Amino acid sequence: MLVQAKQASTVTRFVFPAPRAHAPRAVVCKQENSFSASLELMGTKFPYVRNEEIYGQGESSEYLYKIISGSVRTYKLLDDGRRQIGAFYLPGDVFGLESGAEHRFSAEAISDAVVIAVKRSTLNALSQSDPVIARELWQITARELDHVHDLMVLLGRSNARERVAAFLMKMAKDTHSAVEIELPMSRQDIADYLGLTIETISRTLSCMERDAIIALPSSRKILLRNRVALRKLNS
Amino acid sequence: MLVQAKQASTVTRFVFPAPRAHAPRAVVCKQENSFSASLELMGTKFPYVRNEEIYGQGESSEYLYKIISGSVRTYKLLDDGRRQIGAFYLPGDVFGLESGAEHRFSAEAISDAVVIAVKRSTLNALSQSDPVIARELWQITARELDHVHDLMVLLGRSNARERVAAFLMKMAKDTHSAVEIELPMSRQDIADYLGLTIETISRTLSCMERDAIIALPSSRKILLRNRVALRKLNS
DNA sequence: CGTCATTTTGAAGACTGTCAACGCGCGTGG
DNA sequence: CCACGCGCGTTGACAGTCTTCAAAATGACG
Picture 1 (tube, each protein chain N blue to C red):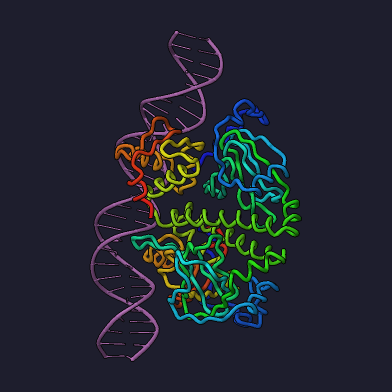
Picture 2 (cartoon, each protein chain N blue to C red):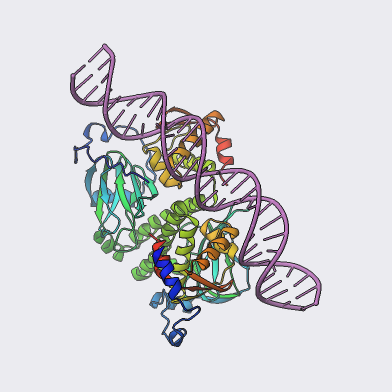
């Protein structure tokens, strides 16, 4: 089924996306509080190329990650190749915080990305003495839970149109853009996130364009033209 | 296929390891640690009748709950009546811990139930000074996250048979029963949990009974007759 | 024993998946 | 410079799974 397009054939592993990495996009990061900021001081920067694995399902979870640039997907693979993406992470987001000793999801760079990795042992030690740190760690997990709860309703009780609409609204919010969304991920990623197929994603987007709800100037760029209609698809 | 057929022919109907069925198995409750135990001392017991609301979507989340007896469902309602159940909670389980100030789910008693309610303000205060409490609160949230992650894969990437199989395996584990499962919830609850309809639930169960994977002595009681086949439906 | 809720079963239909073909953009190399 | 291949996305036709609508069976309870 899902052919895993592991084009890790891009042999340029570990190449720094140097020139464009910190482009002055003046992006307002979502979770910018003192804790999130201090993570950057505690950790080490690591660059990843497109589709490179950051950690794998089953590996011990030693680090907490914060994205500096690029984007990341976490996912779970079923043994027959089916894939469910748990979340997309954008610059400023924190990921990799799981309860157990092992990762229950894998994480990959969607595009070339730079992340800061902080040792969990360090954080655990800090949280022992500092309730603020402990609370922050908890809050990150709790926000994650909120997100998955929303996705759950989507996957369990929504049709294709509603799922895509919800995805677009969320992306607009996450990228702080009013009308123009730049998608870092492929149609396959969106499909595996929304529990659909690429064909359904493509068809639904085309249909929304015909209905003048969105515009598709290119496959990775989407313009929201009728937010009211989009919101009406959410509940 | 082969396995199912073979087992079917060797099965003696309804024979199960009688001597140890309800033997004093020293039932170990799931979350029975000192923290969970101390919750009972901090809180107050409340009884709820079947289908009574414990809290509602949007209400401020003032309490953390632990189930003494009975069972509870949490769910989200869409405005057109569609319902997604987030989780079922059994005796010993803790629920109601959400990150924000407001509940994003509603909670109801499935059957008559007794729960202990602990003020969140109390817990928050305690966790400020006691890192162990803080960690426990975090762990409860993290376990919740793990569960929802599993459900997410189910809802996004599994067919009806796989969903029902996963549900049965989970219920068997949660109720600490090897072969006989007593369901506290209705078909409608199961359907709204698995993102299906009652008809599909019923049909799938009937089909599994025909395949000698389970037996249905009554609608609320299910016997697991072929765990291998069930497990094969999980991935 | 009758009533009501719940569950099961059946038949038809809708939505999404599957399979296949085509288009598009882009880098490579003749 | 342009043909070609490749990855990705789009579109179409058809099939399959699950839902919907309807009705019969089962079971709990007065």
